[in-house]
Amino acid sequence: MMSFKPKPLFEAFFICKMDIIIITGPPYSGKGTQCEFLKEIFNYQHISTGDRCRLEKQNKTEIGLIMSQYEEKGDLVPDEIMKNLFGNILEENSDNNGVILDGYPRTIAQVNDLLEIVSNRDLQISTVINIEVPREELLKRAKKRAETSNRKDDKDKAIHLKRIDVFEDVTKPAIAYMKTKLHVEDFDGLGSIEDITDTIKSRVIN
Image 1 (cartoon, helix red, strand yellow):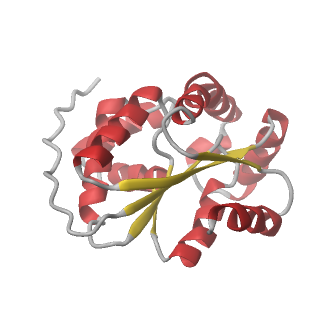
Image 2 (cartoon, rainbow, N blue to C red):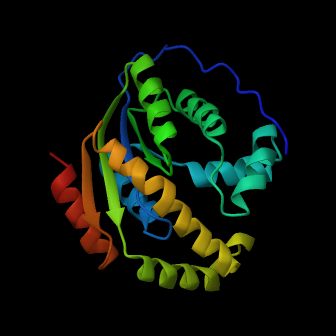
C-alpha cells in the first residue's frame, strides 16, 4: 500500500465568503443529476469528488494512484487523502461565489475535517441536501447504469453491493452527525427527476 503525506492546507486568503451547498445520499441516488440542475439555478460550480478522483487516477497523480487502490474495490478513500484533495478543490475555486459539493463528506471524520476547513477560511455551508432512496431501488439503478456505463467498476455487482453497504455503515451515520452540526433537508429520491428537482427548489431556494 502506498503512503501519502498531505500537503499543508492553504491559508485563509479568500476575499469573498464562498457559499457551500452539500448534496449527499447513497450511491445511485441521482445526486449528480440534481447537482447539474442546481448549479444552473444558483450559478455555483458543481464539484463532484467522484469525478475528481477519477481524473486524478486517469492522470496517475500521486494521490490518484492511492485512490485507485481503494475505489476500485468499492472502499472509501482514507479521510486524510480526501481532506487534502478538498483543500485543493477549494483553492482552485476560490473565485466562485459558491460550490455544490457532491460526494464529500462521507465519514464522521470528514464532516469534522470539512467544518474545520470552512471555519478556518470564514466560509459558510448554507444547506445540506440529503436524497433518500431504498436499498432495493438503488440495486435496480445500479444494474441499469451498468448497461450503459463504460466504467469497469460499474459492471461488477459485488462492487454495487459493497458501495451500498459502505454507505449504510459509514456515510449514513455521518449524515446523522451532520444533522447535529448543520442545516440538513431530507428529500425522497423516488419519482421523476423533474419532480425531485422541483421539490428541492421549493424547499431550498428562499
